Amino acid sequence: MMSESNSEQKIPVKQIHSKDKKVKVSGRRSTKHEKHRPRHRIYVRAVEGVYQSLRNRMNWVMMVSFMLLPWIHIDGRQSVFLDFANRQFHLFGLTIWPQDLMLLAFVFIIAAFSLFFFTTFLGRVWCGYWCPQTVWTFIFIWFEEKLEGPRNKRMRLDELPWDFNKLWRKTAKHVCWVGFSLFTALTFVAYFWGSHASFVGFFTGDMTFWPYFWTFFFTLATYGNAGWMRETVCLHMCPYARFQSVMFDQDTFTVSYDAARGEARGPRPRKKDPKELGLGDCIDCVLCVQVCPTGIDIRNGLQYECINCGACVDACDQTMDRMGYEKGLISYTTERQLAGGKTNIMRPKLLGYGMVLVIMITALIATAVGRDPLKLDVIRDRNMLSRLNEYGLMENVYTLKVLNKSQQVRDYQLSVQGIEGLEWSGEQVVTVEPGEVFSVPVSLAIDPYLLEKPITELEFVLIDDAGNRVVQESRFIKGR
Ligand code: SF4
Ligand code: SF4
Figure 1: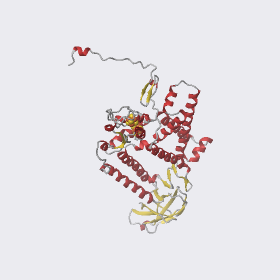
Figure 2: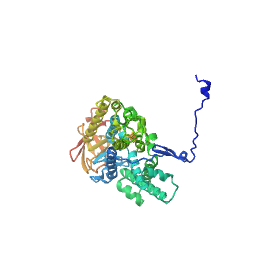
Figure 3: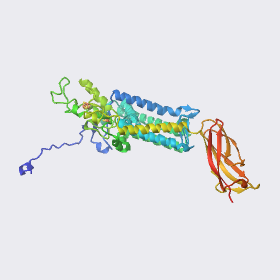
Figure 4: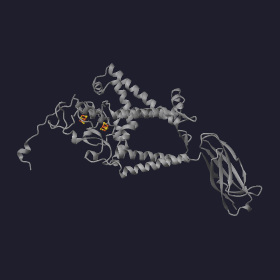
C-alpha cells in the first residue's frame, strides 16, 4: 500500500502549449491545423536500392502493358476487349462467351490461389510490388517530388504562406495528377468500349453517357486514391490487409527488423565500437520510417500496415553501408530465421496451395485448348409440342441456334439422326459471321406409324467447314 507521504508526492508536470508549435513525429508532421485534416500527412522520402529498382522495373512493365494492350490488335480485334454489350470477352485471339463461364471461373480460382500462395510464401508482396494502388501512389509521389522537391522541401513548402512559387508548384502538381488520372481512366474504359471509341470519342464528344460517366468516375477515383488517400486505402479500405495475416506462418518472408542485432538503438560516432557504448547496430536515424509509404516504424515489429515494399530495407542498408556495418538489419526474412532457426519452405500449406494452383492452371489450359469453336442449341416450340400436318405426317418444330465461336466466317451443315424416315424442312447449310449466333427454324415430320414410342430420342448434328462437329440431343414427340 502506498503510504500517505508517498501519495502526496507529486510527479513534476510541465505544461506544453501546442499553440503555434509544430511537433515532428518521425516521418509525420503535425501542425496547429492538424485537427482540420482527415489524417496526418506522410511525406515519403525517396530512396534507391535493390528492392526499389526491382519495384520500379515491375511497375514499368505493368504500366506499359496496361497502357499498350488496348492498342494491340490480333486478327483485327483489340487484344483485350471486355465487350459486355455483346456478352463477349476477347483475350489475345480467344473469344470467351457466356457459355464458357467455366474458363472465367478457373481464372478467378487461379487468381485467388495465387494470392494465397504468394502471401504464404512472401507476405504482402502483391501490395508492395503489383497492387495498382501502390503503383499509382508511387507515380503520384514522383510527380510531387519533381514539382515540389524532396521530402524536406515539401514539408517546408506546406508550412509557408501562399505565394507565387507555392501556387504554381501546387497547381502544376494537381494538373499533372488530374491529367494522369484522366489518361488512366480513358485507358481503363478502352478495355470495355474500345481504344478508338474511348480516346477519340472522349475528345470529339462521340461518347455515349456510360463511357463518359465511367471516365469521369475513374478519373476522380484515381486522383483521390493516389493523390490524397494513398495509404488510407491500404490501412482502412482494403479487405486484403485485414485477412492476409491468417495466411502468414513462421516461415513467411516478411520485412522484419532484427531487434537482437539492432537494440539498444541510438546515435554514435562512426568510428566508435557500438559494443563499447552498449549499443546495437541501429543508429536511430529514422530513415526507415521516413521512406515508408504507410508511415510505420518497422522496428516496432510486424504490423498489418506493412505492405512489404522493401523501401525500409534499402534505406537501412544505405545506413549500414555508411556506418561500415553489415547490411540486413532490416531484411526480408522469416520469424523462424529471426529466432535462429532454418526457414522451412517445403511446408504442407504452401505445397497445398501450389498443387491447387498447378491443377487449376492445367485445367484452364485444357479447357481453353479443348474448347469447341462452334456451339449448337436446340429450342423446342413450347406452344406446340407436335401436330398432324395437312399430309397426315406428325410434325415437331425446333429453333436451332448456331454459334460461331471462331474468329473466321464459317459454313455449317445441319442434320438429324436417331429416327429413320424424318423429313427436314428448313435451311441445312448456313453461313455465320465470327461471334454471331444464327437462328434456324426447322420442322421435322414423319409418318406417325413409323414411331414406336410416344417420345423418341434424336440428335441434331452440326459440322463446320473445318470439320469440327457437335451433337445436341433432343426429342421427337408423337402426340395423341
Ligand atoms: S534505418 Fe536502420 S539504422 Fe536507421 S533507424 Fe531504421 S533500423 Fe535504425
Ligand atoms: S515498413 Fe518497410 S516494407 Fe513495410 S511498408 Fe513500410 S517501408 Fe514498406
